[in-house]
Length: 124
Image 1 (spheres, rainbow, N blue to C red):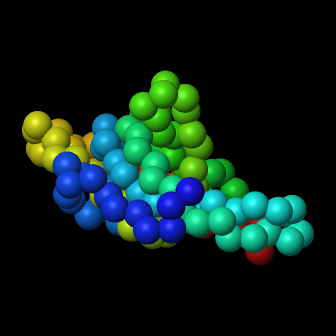
Image 2 (cartoon, rainbow, N blue to C red):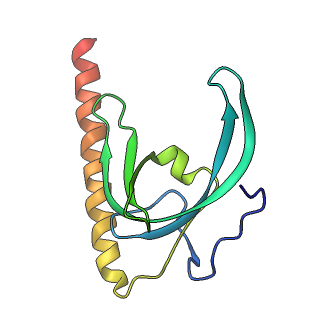
């Protein structure tokens, strides 16, 4: 595991806080060893993948992304962890298509927050 991560140059656009389906992303992720009760920081590793889906959790609207890794494996990661150390993407061939994907994601997020708000108000 590396402690000094270099993001490849083709991942040149900082999208920390605003990834969407179709983005090819690169980020660094902390690695820990030891037990759950006594974790020890072991360094960071570079993760590269493509965002293939995202969702908002029903109860707390926690944003979860599914990445497809170059190996073909899939990785689930919470948005707060994906964005933690910076997130970078490759340019799209058609940036207008990305804008459409972002708008759709933002609309789903707004709907999820409104739904949760209504549910919370019903308990009061």
